[in-house]
Amino acid sequence: MDSEDMDPEGTDTEVMDPEGTDAEAVRARYAGAAQAFMELAGQVPHQAWSRPALGEWDVRALTGHTSRALTTVETYLGTPAAGARVPGPVEYFLAVRGATSPAAIAQRGRETGEALGEDPAAAVRELVQRVTALVRNTQDDALVATPAGVMTLIDYLPTRTFELAVHTLDLARALGLPPPAALAPAVAASLELAGAIGSRLPSAGDLLLLLTGRTGLPENLSVL
View 1: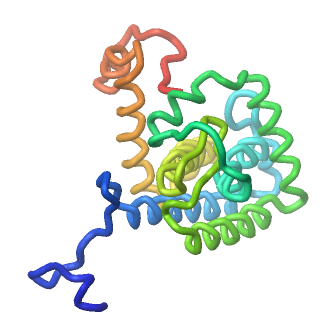
View 2: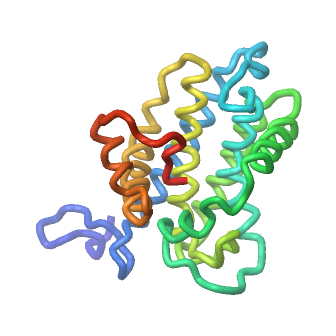
């Protein structure tokens, strides 16, 4: 490592943008979450793809929905970016919250799951390899055309890490398997992001009570 990459005491310094984002950590969490998803998809027994998983979704549909945390990066990087800027992941989730009907989300998950083909695990593996390579070779400030508006790649990736973390946990629960160890940093970061989103909602107090183990909370309480 060149001397320019070291602090005066000889330890590595974090690479941060002017707003304090640790870009390398953002990238590492996304890559780790993608790896965990791929690992878990590779453990699905052939007969389990039709097993009930989450709401209306079976394991195949849940896997398809989760894979969109990869395909959207690829698609939105390839889409001309124009329009309002979204400053960060919290604002992204606030903007898209409730924008798509649950029925439409459920149907898209089923369609995406079917599109994984006869060997969903192999399709996920190829997708993870392709998209993580794309992310590695794309600048932090590359523009991404999201449904909420234009974002930089480094600001958009935490939203995809969040989706990978939550739905990989869903998949592990559906399969009765422990979450892969590589998912842990993404889960920790996603908890922080969920808290930041929740603090901006009218239900902030209820969410805090939920996290501290109180009972009698409203149904369907969520930051999403």
